Length: 199
Image (cartoon, rainbow, N blue to C red; front, side, top):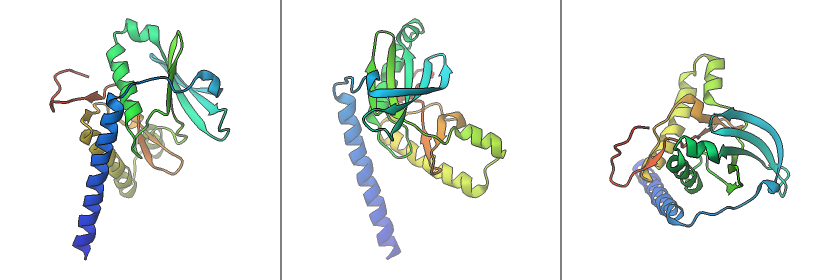
């Protein structure tokens, strides 16, 4: 009886991964176009800044209770730092992944200065901050987080992606305590199962 339940669980998970791969491949090959504009959002406050640009907390006008984080990337900086291909790859990956423990892109648009990547707002902050506050996670919490990260990476690898930047700063924790792996800047799609470039 237990073996039958386990076999069904593994079969269901295998079906999930195969469907996820088909969905990812379809989105990856599809045309990419703008799906919103800055006028669709109320700008609220800056969440963070970096060399790429900044992240802004916004509220969607059509869904007043829905908060998003918009990553604004300066086009000029992307070109000057020769990050065009990396940026295109990051955007396409964020658009195509759909998994509970990964950040994905809900909308994309651009203007003359910026690229705008609209993602769900995760209000729990970085795992790094939680770890620094608690000093260490107990065994139960460590297993809980590790299991989610493992599932996220199993999904990523099944899609033919390598992530290459796992660290506590790139793991967000949502309001319910679940993880969301973010930042696909070093992520790469590999077709021949090998990569020959450095991050």
